[in-house]
Length: 123
Image (cartoon, rainbow, N blue to C red; front, top):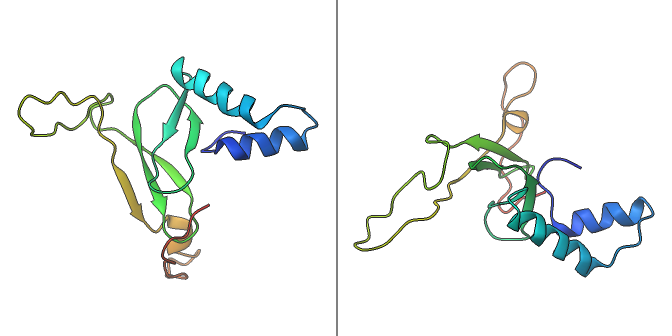
């Protein structure tokens, strides 16, 4: 399927393809793939959890208009890329979520703004 998908998306696609797999099995499989480091949870904020096939730490840009999620390279390439300044704390990961309007929603072919952000829009 590619991209950033929820367990529900995966279950729905399996059902459409004719596979008979219980929804719980999909959740268990995603959890096992995540534990094995083959799938990452894509932190895009509140709402359903999205997953992606990736083993490289990165962040995400979420479009407020269409809800598209785009990978953003981590400056350091590994976690944690930021450190919390909390005495005696050990930071294991830091997630940055960029929010705004993606290029497709911002400009048409002439570079003119065509859409305005819709609060809470997600895909």
